[in-house]
Length: 104
Length: 385
Image 1 (cartoon, each protein chain N blue to C red):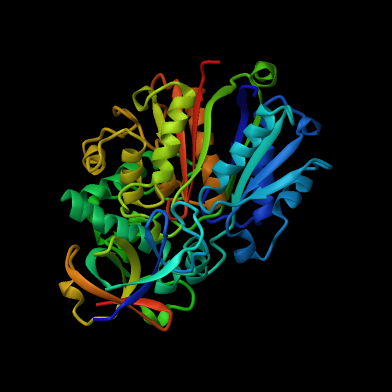
Image 2 (image 1 turned 45 degrees about the horizontal axis):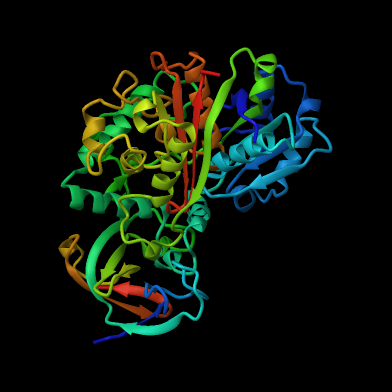
C-alpha cells in the first residue's frame, strides 16, 4: 500500500496538507509529518472542459475531492481510464506524483 | 462608532464595455457622487475593490488613477483585494472610515475589465484565488470548484441540476427588464442543461459571464445623511469574515463557513433574523452558489434551496425575493465591481426605485463571497433612519 506524507498538529491533532509552517486550524507550532494510507472515498468530482491558461492540452480533465479514511480532504486529478464508473462515494486511492495529487 | 448611511450609488452597465478599467471606475464614481448632494472636495477617502485588473490589463495603482481621474486630489486612496468579495470589502472600509470619525464622507468603487482577454487567460487569472500551492496544481478552475459543490449537492440531497437550473431561468426573467444586465434573453431549463459543459455538472448557462463594469457608493454619518441625500439608506450591519482558502481546510463543500458566520454576526449587529429581510442580493457566481448561499444565509434549510427556487419562493413577488436585479448570472460578474453592484440594487430597492421593485422593501441584505468561500461580506441596509 502506498503511503501519503501529510502533517499533523500535536495539539489539536488535525491532519493537514503541506505546505504549513504551523497548524492551519489552531495556530499551534511544531507541526509534525505523519503517514496515512491514501485510501478514501470520492467526495465529489468535476469534469473540466474549459481550462486555465497552460492546461489547454489536458482537457477534458477530471478533478476530484477525496475524503481520506483518516479524515482529510484532498484535491486530486483523475488518471484512471474508467471515468464512466466515477460516482460520488466510491472507494479510490490517492498518491503524490511529481508534486501533484493523483487518484484512481 | 458613528452610525453610517449610504447617500449615493452609481454603476455602469455591465457587459462588454470598450472603455478602460480606469474610465469605467471614474464613470461609476461620478454617477454615485451625482446621486447625492456632495461636492468632490468633501470626499475624504476612497477605497477601490479590484481583483484581476493588474494581471489582465497590466495596470496597477488603480485607486490613485481613478481618484485623480475624478479630479480628486490629496486624499488617502486604497485598493483592497479579496477575490470576488473585493467590492464588498471596499464598501466596508469606507463605512469603517466614516464610523470611526476618520472621515465624514468616503466612497467605495469597484471595477473590473475582463472581456478584452482570452477565456483561458481569464480562467487562469481567476484561478489565482485557489491555493496555487495545492488545489491549483490539479488543473482546477473556479467553475470546477463550484462543479465539485454541485456534484456533491446532488448526491447528498438527491437533488438534480434541473432543479438548480431554475436559478438561471429566474435570473433571466429578472434581467429581461433590467438594462444594466449583460445577459437578458429568457432561457428554459432545457436550454440551460443543453448548453456547453464548462465544468460538469455545470453548463455554460450555470456560470456568470466574464464581464466588464464598475459600481460605486458614497457614505457619510447618519446625522449628515438627510442633508446630503433625498433618500439615504442606513447601514444596520457591515460584516466581513474569512473562511477556507484551501479545499483540504474543510470537510464539507455544501456550506461556506465564512457566509454562515458573517450572516450570524450581521443579523446580531442589526438586531434582526433572516425572516425580517425583505430583499436579498447574494453571490450567485454559479447557479449552485445561489442555492448554497440562500441556505447559508438562513432563508432555507440545508438541501431545500433548489426546490425553493423551483417553487418560485425567490422570485420578485415570492416570499423572499433573491437577486431581483438578475444577479451575477445575468448582470455579469466584473469581479471587483460585484459587491458594489449588489449594494446599488439594494439601495434602489429600499428607495422604491428599482426596476424590479419588491413591494414594501424596508430591509435589504447584500452578500459578497470570494474564492473558495475564503472571504465574505454581509451588509444589511434599511430605509428606516
